[in-house]
Length: 249
Ligand SMILES: O=C(O)[C@H]1NCC[C@@H]1O
Image (cartoon, rainbow, N blue to C red; front, side):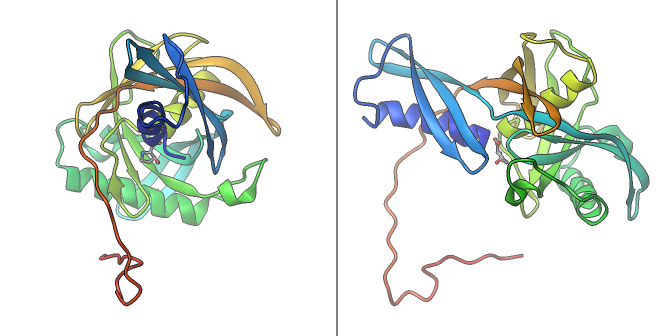
């Protein structure tokens, strides 16, 4: 699941006419993601769309304080949370790094080492569908998990060591589920999350308790602002040997 894509697609659905009669001040857009139904609410006033908030699928703490052997770094304690995708969480200072000011290459290498170690050492499980039971990435944080009016920063390194340009919608969802599980945040306490990569912001809060199988879960609301950057048309000609794309590692 991609939370920042939900924010972008919610706005696009309203602006592109996919929703025939958008309502003001908000229009609801339901998006079926691989993890389940995600409900987006798009601000819509005077014919203009604005910020988008979404309600997540049930998000939960899968495991906390898990000791992992990370080659080159020794034993590290991580938390694992689910917010539409599974992420491992660890404070960047465990690597002597800062999510906002350290070199991105160093943050990516450290996060990737954690991802690889967790994949090898922890068996994930999702009550709804075992296809969801894979680790999407590692989120390095500034360690500021206790509720505060101040923003908390993180950087999400996901898939093939890609860096999220946003604070990560599904990651923020998982992080709030972990914070709620640990008693560090209450329902409806809004927290601001900053991307260490780009300084962009989401806000998030747990809005409701829920269940996911035997896991105590929460529904999390994440909100942010998407912007248009352009439109494009793509073609796939049958005789193009690269029409299915390619990956350089
Ligand atoms: O916002 C998100 O949820 C996504 N960003 C990169 C990884 C996730 O799919």
